[in-house]
Length: 598
Image: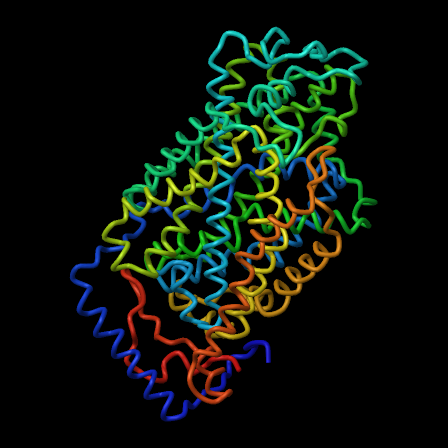
């Protein structure tokens, strides 16, 4: 009994006692809302035609498009990697993106309130809130690093361009055409390790706070705060700049990159297909995880962004546009990155596969090394790190917006009237927690957050239950009718098949494979101690436990027989005639039950 696959549905006849309980709850909610609606501030809507579209583009297109996808593509068979990538996109990425944005638009409420559709799965919303909170505290650290590098670029000579600085060692080198550098350290690496971080030897040596990074982290949070403090009407204006600026920079960097010697070899390495790689299961896992993480699924942010749409906005069209832009941007960014890596291969005489790296290694080591060979180096460094800043910033403030929206819509009378203060308090709390990532040992803490708290199995676990809660329990046919009510027509049957069968299978498969292939966390040659991994698992379970935990809590606190409890837990509590200020009760006792899945 997984979900509706035909138009016909089964009506659930509630026992008189439960029906009376529902009527009393709905009457109480209606009376309470009517009494307070006069003083409750409007939650707002997108005002401009492209506000929602650009917000989704800015949110989904982030650092992963620039520093992870190109590396995975080059590592996993070049053009052949696009086969598992686009298959995962079609079977899971786009269906989940559409599901979340459509949920938000139909209910006009944040990531906690939407689970009135399937009450026993409210734990999914709680898990998403915890997960997004962890993500907010450490993802912004990357923006702080980018700002630090950006400020360091406003000099006649880049500080990582030579070995004449106080932090450099005798083993430093800046001549990248040297053939034997096996016992030496590049000037770029020494700047990253000895100046930016002053890195210690392990997690058990946190060291002191790096105050320059504390300053750039504070500046990052100020940028986030002033991007969302006035509500979505203001945020809709901000994204017109923050979402489009990276594209101008990518185009400029592309035309500079393709004119460099060695660029052709780098691009060919990136796009030439090696179909033999497709026999490696790790290639398929990399493709799937890239889709789930780069599209920002499962965090509740897409639900929040969609909730500010007008009811009849064509969310289906917007979803397809954003997903197309996202994947095309990833491919285009790969051309930019590998043209520069090909150039560095030409300079250093090293194979391209040795120079290609992912994550911070690409953004703060490989590319800074490359800009030292360009003229003028400061200009290209400013362009690159300003692009990184904007890529990270709009992803960050949209995630924070999703977190804030979920809580304010859950407690509107307590929080919405004090929105600016509430956002400021949450930014300060997140800043203080994030300070542990910018101590001298903060890089080890950052890796711990990244590996456990808001990615990997944690996110996949959440997304699986998010999918089945709507398609199996709320009812996929009912959800299709909801979408038809909004956009005026039904999408093709493909998305229904994905939500009921294909997407849960893909997510569950990747989750299980990730669990089997999971290895102890490392950073370079450093292996994290058992107690460090224990802290990581605590962060992971701090969100995951809410999904089964809330289901158990609801079962034991709901009155009635076993069957009655299940009916109360799986059926929508309120009708969905919603707008501007959240859910409003529908007085019909049978609405919401007519085509529920059992």
